[in-house]
Image 1 (cartoon, one colour):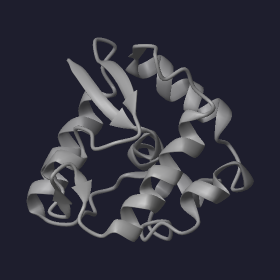
Image 2 (image 1 turned 90 degrees about the horizontal axis):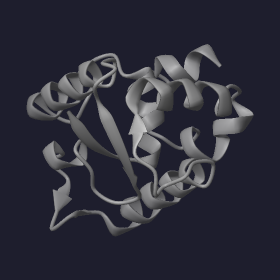
Image 3 (image 1 turned 180 degrees about the vertical axis):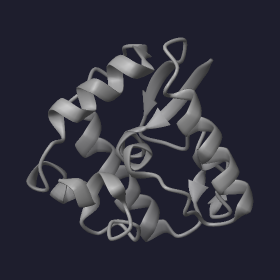
Length: 128
């Protein structure tokens, strides 16, 4: 399977435990979370709407309907993506191992996770 994932979603998937905006969103992210655990899944990176966003009720015309939120989302993406080669296609398992190596302290994710509405429930953030 091939997936397109925006930068900050690489961290979200590490901490996902079933919360989301609505049932459709939760079902989609659960399926994607299962796919990234397969050695056959290939990931392309983006700082725009991705395969997770496609089921978000706040997505309108490829952008978050809240312009301020959209700007913050892209900033979070760019913080993650500046540590990766965005032109490369990644094997999912290898990419998430790389994510574990790069983002392994609360300081390393402070510009990404601290203002996230899910950070208090996020397993990834809580274990840092």
